[in-house]
Image 1 (tube, rainbow, N blue to C red):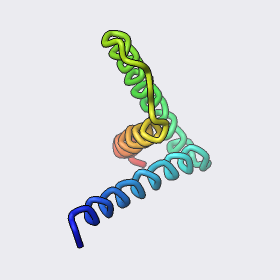
Image 2: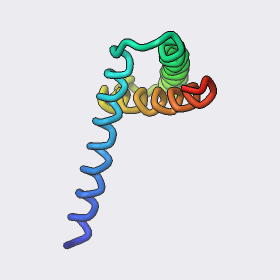
Image 3: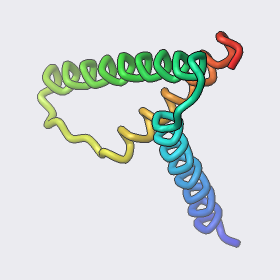
Length: 98
């Protein structure tokens, strides 16, 4: 196997992992649960919204300051959101014993 084949294989594995994170994020938001589980999901969702809104504001300010056009790949944005949500969900589950 050549170097390019390994790079493509690693890229596909990472892409699959991000797709699984996106699907898991949607399932955890929709799935009903007990009150403690709902509080954990609520806090993780609020933290994710705050983090992603802050990142977007910083990106807008950076683009305005440098004079670049504002372009964004929606898949990258969704993946970043899923990673922040996953991390926040793990943090709040551990903190609240979920």
